[in-house]
Length: 190
Image (tube, rainbow, N blue to C red; front, side):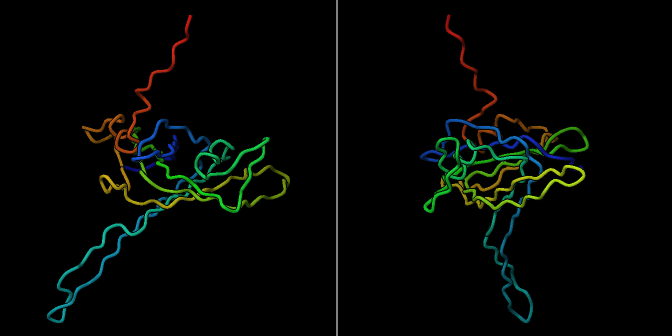
């Protein structure tokens, strides 16, 4: 299947034991570049490759292009201080561990869901241009590196709606440890 576009970027700040109390939206997703590397080493014997030794995933990185990154999101995922309506990027900034997900629609109309379970985002610079004859949209980018989750060694979860037994709730539970689709909104007290 061909993938067409992407949307529904979400994130959650991980608490102790890799759990999260809340999954939040990260609106304005324009691009997502997922980089996955595995290292293999050839073992030679009898004048030929005798075996290929694998070391598993050695790099998992993600770069989001976003229309804008809100101050709240920068505070949550980058560790930026927000005071008096200003974002303060301090020398000793420390980003928390987060989980994140997004989806891409296939030409069948179903979605492929991507979830990265434990990583840290880093801020990037801005590349702004003057407005010329026609306005040009200018976006922001944030990048993250991911590691394996300690309890199950999972780094990346890919769920496909065209797989017969796929359930979105199980995808969310695997990535975040909670299912935001099952959360009930608070009721108004009379």
